[in-house]
Length: 193
Ligand SMILES: [Fe+2]
Image 1 (tube, rainbow, N blue to C red):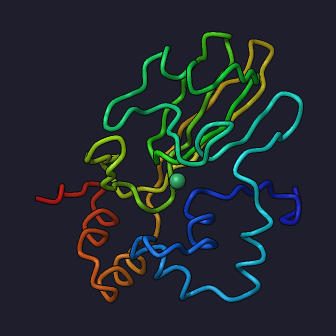
Image 2: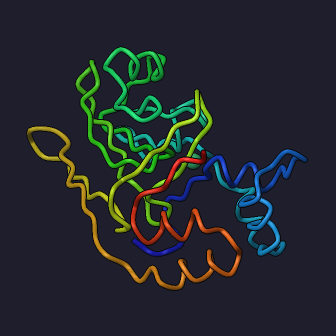
């Protein structure tokens, strides 16, 4: 697949960086300062949810939200009922999602496979929704998934590999963000007290 054919999605932070409302967080403000017109135009062109083909759907959070987490409920795994409720009737053989940064593969009630490959960078974070909690993947590694359609249906391999994270850790240090230094280098984050 040529690079121009890569399927790319926006996440909630792309939207937040573009909107840049007054209550936007420090990280979104920092990101916006680093970006030029070309990057912002590219970000504006992305959708958070779209079909890849007839069998596969791609979304950042859920098919209709870029901030709702599909497979997690705060710090625990979402139940089957919670997942079904968030799918709102959406049916795909394979649904690829993100947002939680937690790698997980789940069968929906209709038999479809839902895969969150995890994230590259930000392996742990603190979130205030629906109540203050911490999500920690437990290692600084980069995570991705390989999915394959077999005669028995879709299968997923969830992988985690080390990557050159020192530059990211150093950037966080220079930006005076000790919580990101810790998260990026360990995969854990200390809750605010
Ligand atoms: Fe997100």
